[in-house]
Image 1 (cartoon, rainbow, N blue to C red):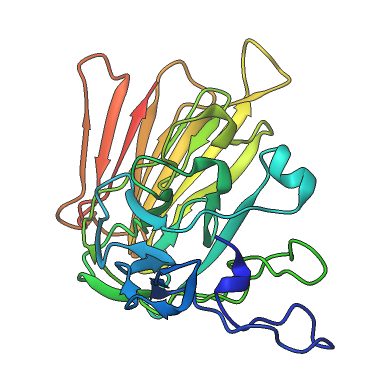
Image 2: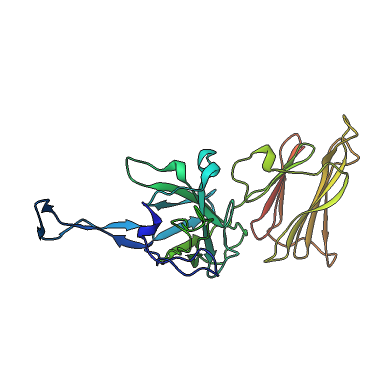
Length: 311
């Protein structure tokens, strides 16, 4: 499909517009026939079936906070090419920008704020190029209600094929949106283990390369909620078997006026300490439990948030 058939486009501001874009529309063609000997006698025009040329996607996406991710699938009904070497090297692609109109802090796109279509992914079986956007609901650990938002598309920009032939998708902006609803869930987990390696709330694969690594000793803010008074602090010391790296040896859990500390930094077995801002007893709902050998400890705060410690 040659872009010259799809309407007005302008490669550079100094050049006149050459054809208008017809992407995002249903296209068709007309034909009629005649005999060579009687070219003035022609048949009636025959209209082809229409074909949607552009980007398609599902209308509604429901993203659950308790799920790892939601795969939003988009498809291009039109194949495309790129200039020279990019086509041969498999680097021919089109990026379709994404934007959220509201509550953008409640859902995010895992990799980038666009969907990338690769030319060599064209399927001759279903006449589509398919691409995915991985949506992740922000796990804020609180009941704040389901959210509704809209994904809009930005305008696509792409380098021209030649000096006077624009790319087929250049200047195209899909004229529809996707309704997104995030479903609330209070459950989310992050971990710190080993020397130490951190797996964050929104890490999807557990891939070591996507974990956080802190090898220095010291005290660190492990987690702090931006929505309510809850935070977790960790303490690291040099590991006994390797003084070039550090290991977890203590954790403090704070919620409002209550603090529970698990200390294993200079001891052969952990001890548990309790503190309050007022000096009084802990609030009802603070629960600290441990197994029979004292190596597993679970601290549950009144909100339901909990921290597990394995020694």
